[in-house]
Length: 273
Image (cartoon, rainbow, N blue to C red):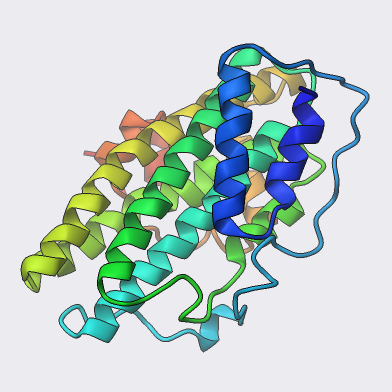
C-alpha cells in the first residue's frame, strides 16, 4: 500500500466506525511492513475537523461544566466529553503520522500506536455510554484540539510541543481530578467509569513520553534549547498559558519526561516534589 495516501483516507473518513475499520486494515499492513512511503506526497491542510459533519460544534464557553456525577444525564455528559477528547486524539495521532515526512520509522510506529490506543479508549467509553442508552453526538462539543492541529500543520517542532507535550500533558493533570470526584460519588456505574479512566491515564503517560522524545528530537534537528523553546511555543499557540499558574500532576509529568525546572516554571512553585 501507499502509506501516505491510505493513511490520508483513514484520517479524512467522517464516520467513526468506518474510520476505525479502515485504520485496522491500514495498521495491519503497516505492522507487516506491507507498504511504501512516497515522500513526494503533499499533505492536506485542514479547515474543518472530521467530525464537523455529525457533531454540534460550539464555542467552549457555551458548554455546561461537568458537575453532576450522580444523575444519569451527568454520567452521560461526562463520558461523552471524554469520548470527544479521545476521538479528537485519534485524528491528532493520525495527522502526526501523516503530515511529517522523512522521519525515522520509529516515529510513525509511535504515533500509529498512539492512534490505536486512542481508538481503544474511544470504544471503551462508547460502550459505557451505550449502557446508559447514549451515543456519540448526544451533546455539543468544542474543537479546541483541532484548532491546535490547525495552528501547527506546517511545523513539526510546534506540533510536538503543542499537542502531546501540552494538550495531552494537560490530560494527565485533569484525569485524576475527575477520578477524585467519581470516588466521592461512588456507585456501581461510576466504578466502571473509574476503571476506564485508570487505563486511559496510564496509557496517556506513554503518549506524552512519546511526544517528549520526538519534541526533543525536533529540537536537536533545529538546534534549539528544549525548555525555553517549549515555553515560547506554547505561549504562541496558547496565549496566556505560561503566565497562569498550572495545577500539575507532577509524578505523571516527570514519568513522561518533564524536567523539575519545567514543572516549577509551569506551576509557579519553588519545588517539584
